[in-house]
Image 1 (cartoon, rainbow, N blue to C red):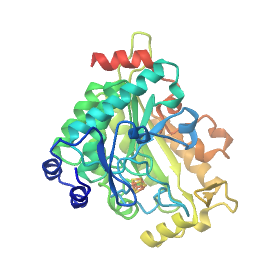
Image 2 (image 1 turned 120 degrees about the vertical axis):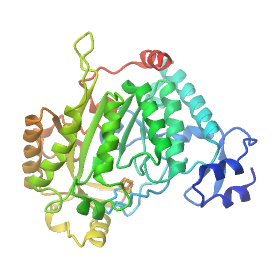
Image 3 (image 1 turned 45 degrees about the vertical axis):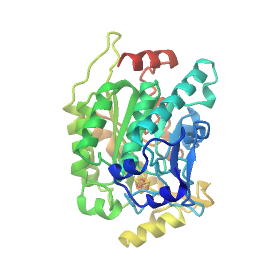
Length: 392
Ligand code: SF4
């Protein structure tokens, strides 16, 4: 495939159009658009860079990998952590795939198989047993090509015994996507760790904070579909809380009750050994501030985050000092949320990584990573994973 032809396709997000211009005669590999706007063809060997070791908090502890399907994100959140630093997070090499879906699937499958063999050889540190779909972009953003690439790749990973975790503000792009994703979730419920996240259930506030993302009501519809598909590990995130903007007791109550209603209506089966095969939780956490994040929130909402932040930064991330919200505010809201969750029979977890200064919440995990976030759930080893995947 000539590079000029690829460049012509750059702006297109229409799958049929992309298919027509990528007739399947290209050598093995896939075409991706790098952040420098250049197209190039990646071979299977190159695709080792498809996975990147996650360096964030608990994901680093359990050697989780992540994959990015785009260098951008249509949700355009004002608090976006990806854009929140002096040196923004770099996307991994697979930023936008434009090859036929079948080829993407086959390539991902071959890669997942190769990595599986390494795991069996005891070289698991160097290959993914768990893949998180996107850290600095959303796999369910409103771009058909991103969702299609994520779908074909996710299916290939699951078929080869990888755990796949998501955090998303999105819903499937169209009816076809809705059905296809549901089919995947029905097939591999024990390998998927799904989190729907929403800054607020109030559409006016949500639209200011996450202007490109679907409204909360649509997200709750999709979450209901995920739960009904039998996915075993599902979490509703309330994130990020911003003081005096979306963290009042009434606002937190609305979010907890929206999630609890869905989770409490779902069937929970119990395995022969007494363990629950379905686990639902709510995860909650406050925003943190850097100069760029505070500026971006100000531009979008005319809200000044600075007065609510502690005076001393807790870390330097991406070249930017990172400030947490005042402890007293965080502690009060977290305790309120945990107590309310108990009333509804739902476990509420705090993000342990961003609240290390609150010792009473030590041991809390938001569940972003399957292996660290759900320690009470017995996870399958590499052999069991493959056996399970092969049986589906
Ligand atoms: S969904 Fe995530 S990556 Fe996308 S804009 Fe929002 S915060 Fe940024």
